[in-house]
Image (cartoon, rainbow, N blue to C red):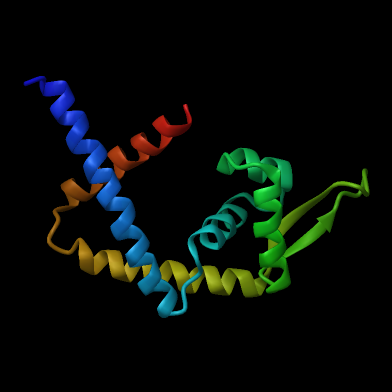
Length: 144
């Protein structure tokens, strides 16, 4: 049997299982008051980057502008982000995380960190570092 094909088959199956289980895990997080995945990812981006426009958010997340626009509008309606008009071109604007958004994001990060810390408690620091590195590499590969 072809070893490369066997390896790819294992990887694609395990990634499918990971996505399913991560979604179930995420549902548990939401029961604890955590943000949903799209909100978490956008707020985390805004926390790390500062104010960002819709086009840049769409490019960063590899989504179309209409999808990002709906997600940002939902966050804005909840008071988690605010629109900042561009002082040069009033038609353009950026979005930044609010104090309330930062509070919700920090709570979500704490919940997620705690749950993963328990889940991965038996893993060595070396295994955690390697797995983090490989997951980052896989995520970059999807967009390269």
